[in-house]
Length: 123
Image (cartoon, rainbow, N blue to C red; front, side, top):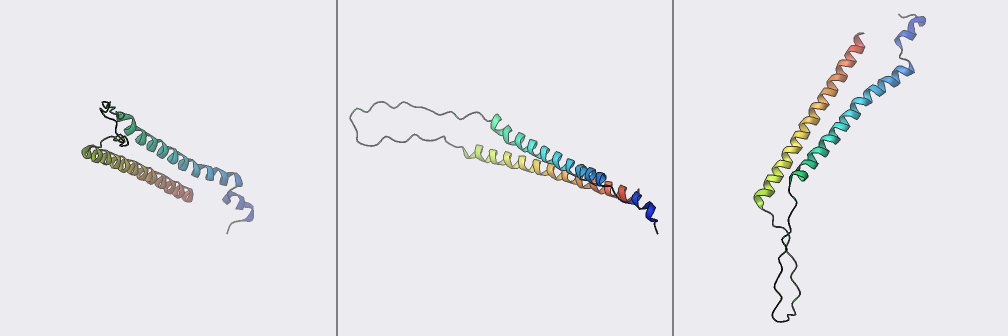
């Protein structure tokens, strides 16, 4: 049995507990920052790569006779189904990449914490 005089060597001081909590919080903050940076980059990249939509303004000739019909609303942009499906595929691909990166970072953090806890137990 341990002597009471030696007990102070086996207890963590308050300063060591705070340091351990800070060390545990730093990887979580770094992971959060990386995810925010990656998601901002992935979301901004397709918007920057796509050309801005061009509105086709066609001047209609003035009517020969006065009409009482209300003016027709201008038509919106025409969406090509092939481009739409390609954009959806690109978005899905980006989400999968971000998910894989997040999973790899999570595994690295868990693995590092496990190694550190084993090292603390052994010595």
